[in-house]
Amino acid sequence: MKKAAVAGALALAAVLSAPMSAGAHAVSPQPAATASPTPVPSPSPTTTSTSTPPPVQERKTLVKYGRHVRQRMDVYWRAGDPLIRPVVFMIHGGWWSGGDKAYMKAVTRSYFDLGYVVVNVNYRLSGDARWPAQRDDALEAIATTRRMASEFGLDPNRYAVIGFSAGGHIAASVGTYGHGQPGLRAVVGVSPVISPLTAYSDGGPGATHEQRKLRQAAVALAGGCGPNKCPRIWSSMEVPFHASYGDAPMLSVHSAREFVPPYQSELLRESLAVYGIDMSVRAYPGRNHSSPLFREPGVAETIQSWVIGHLAY
Image (cartoon, rainbow, N blue to C red):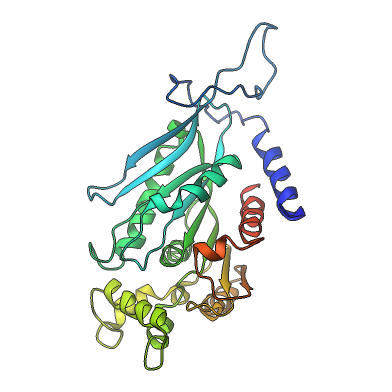
């Protein structure tokens, strides 16, 4: 891990090891599931020398946040944990028409191991409902999780959203929805489709296979309607159009020559700058997109360090 990530991890450890405030509530210990109990330090001195801290057990809980079969999320948390922890939400990619939270298990586990409560979200796909159903699902998943804060031992006012590819589009749309979402501290996009209008244009004559596929996926997300016939829905899909005061800081990472170019994120950075919102756009060599880019040396560590820094205060 790079020095920045190590320093960030130490900062996170310092925050998570601090005693709870007087108004915080710890989750009550529950019977063990499948994980072995692991002792953790008490957040304050024990009253007697024979007292021992309650065991902490890792838990994965499937939560329904709507009636549709895709409106489900996995919550990774710690039963019996005396600490109130920040939250990281994960949103998978898949051209808005496919993919599943199952693809996000490894990255979900990495953030859980860093000390967060992690929520891995499924959402309705473009074949189930057109835009803005996908953004609305993410917003409802977040709202449902925040309402269950005491059950999962999480801080509803300290969370980040990380999205990959089409999931990065959804994450950025959450970050620019309204005039800021309560508790949202940071948004990360890995090869995020920030500008469907740019993707539509890039997918025209002379486009690569991936560019044509992305154009078709954006049209499907709009309910099968192109931007000329359905300008209002395409305007809703275009993240830079919705920048405003109160939006969350963002980080976008792209490969320099991938089919979702860094230029898309640069459009959003310019829009957010008008309102004084910080956005960092980082381009790495090559053509890797989404998860393959995330696995490139240093990329995951850079994102982790950035998230830790934004959730540590």
